Length: 217
Image (cartoon, rainbow, N blue to C red; front, side, top):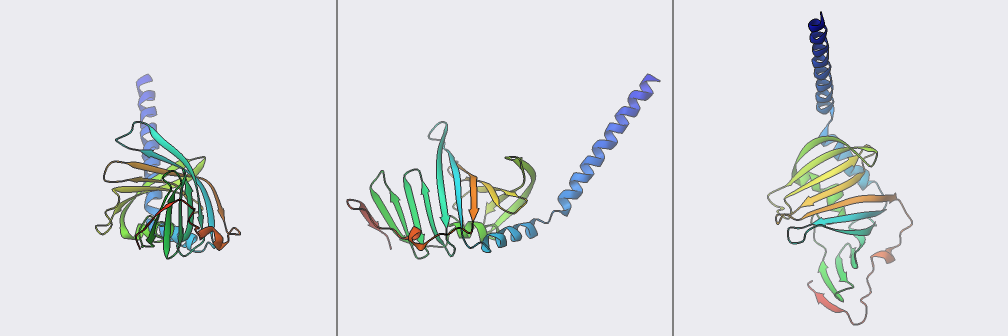
């Protein structure tokens, strides 16, 4: 009698596990990856502008431990943005990019080029140029997020892999990038504010006196 009861419990447990597995599998199959990512991209396209406060963790093979910085991104649409992080200022007016290092007292000027590092390309174009894999759901900062792994297309060998955590309201919460040298960069969103009163003055750069200028245009 005791053995029969134990067997019944084990059988019930196996049936329960199979039901859970089937439910999760069915849920995953019903999740339309391309549809969801297209909606995420459209969500960012529809925004007039936004401001993101974030942290950046950098892990390299050359230095033990993580290098943690805090930054802020102002995005004014059409590749106009201002990035402030760890004494570095990067400003793009959509045509010219100024990369200013306060510590080095140097500014590098380049033409804007379409690449995945620009906020617009990352948010609206990047997944379409890569192989992708849905890794499932994950709780992140008490939010349900969907996790995606991207591999670079052969035409874009700048990184080895990228992982995105995207919330149910179709906003990116976290980005992890690994380059071919084994360096890992993790960007975590702290605050996201959309449709702010942002002026074009944010993307105008005035070169400070005594700063070395490297013009690569």
